[in-house]
Image (cartoon, rainbow, N blue to C red; front, side, top):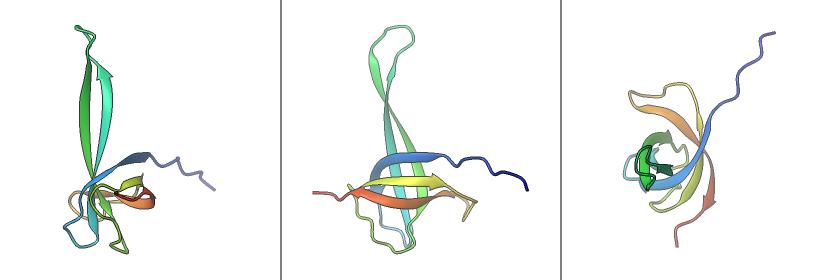
Length: 85
């Protein structure tokens, strides 16, 4: 039996939940500039599948890599870590 590789997980903030059963999750990283040494914020966006449609904008969520579900959806919602205040 072949062992499957571990799936990638990301933690980010929901930046859009206007779609049906889909959310856009933004992951913000602080990266040091290679030449100037200043820390720069880098943002990466992921489109994730939200089966129950229960996420709102501002929620902190954990998403996991999965098989392609549409043209841009390759992630799925695992859990909501913190609700928006």
